[in-house]
Image (cartoon, rainbow, N blue to C red; front, side, top):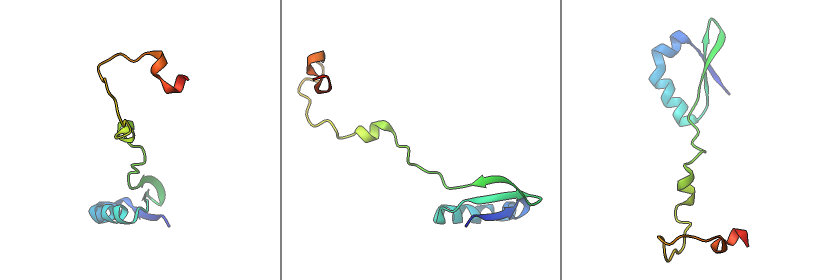
Length: 77
């Protein structure tokens, strides 16, 4: 369930509301005169650095400073 608070309530309890969003993951809607204006939600870190995904994937590389030829790529075979 999405929680709604007015701007004045948000201003008075911002830190408390931030902690609650972090803990529960539930978004918060901030309203102005009853109309939704902002959505505050926990940051989703699904998008990781591509280099982190590749870390540890190279099992062995004998000559790292030698040029790689077209015939050396398994993907092209």
